[in-house]
Image 1: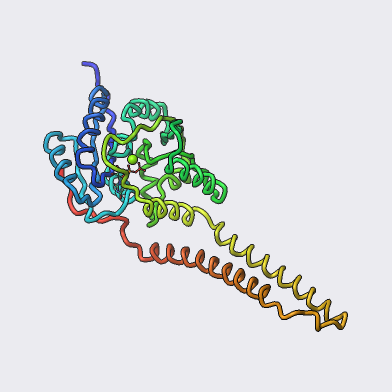
Image 2 (image 1 turned 180 degrees about the horizontal axis):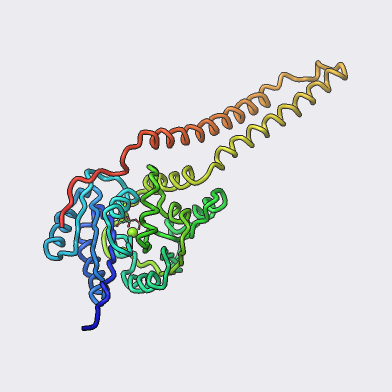
Length: 315
Ligand code: UDP
Ligand code: MG
């Protein structure tokens, strides 16, 4: 009898927030792709505190398909925390994280697995811009990646969404990073290991609206900037030095009148004084703000609270 190689265990980690009607459709799309593959698949759907019927939809999927595991979080913790919950639960040799809205084409899964089998630890999908006019999301995203790559020591792939496959070793490495403010793309870039980029064209959501509100986008960008860069602190420092120099120049200027014995021509310059006071206090407040954010991040890290709370696991 020919000895059969055990099947490769592949996990799909999919965070879901208010995607009723969407998640069923993308599940079908994923199934169509993976049912043709010779691997043992497990779905880890993480319900990130949905307020609509998403949880019932997921439970129905789990009932009909033994490969589906549903992790219910106790409230909405956000995309990165939900992904973390899924990665913590995953057991497979190769773990793929992807969105539930159909924007991450499941057609890439076979290619990701093939690259993993060639020895890559991290297969990072990269969104290439569809040339269909101006999009707020794409514009802010490209500005963001330019900024973060210029101020952080960790190089991050522009357009790299949380659509990637990771070997067991890479997942364990990621799990060993206990950061409260999680910007997984950056953490994965910082980890190293053998990695490869797989470009793809992003499609429109199959249905529903983006769950990334402007507030959530700003918070994610802040997590990236303040967890991966100390440059904002240096900005404050250089601004302080600049103002110190300006003050020195002004002092010399004022003394020059004293030397000439011409003090009467120093007019009581209210406007210039106000200008300097306003700018200087602006700089001080900005610097204090930067320091405040870092202190806040340290505070949250020091509390050591879990990134998410798991309410229930169903399979
Ligand atoms: N998501 C989540 N928690 C949130 C926001 C989003 O789990 O607080 C999920 C969402 O259901 C989707 C994925 O994260 O599967 C990406 O979100 P979305 O498509 O809204 O983001 P976008 O593609 O607009 O960046
Ligand atoms: Mg989306």
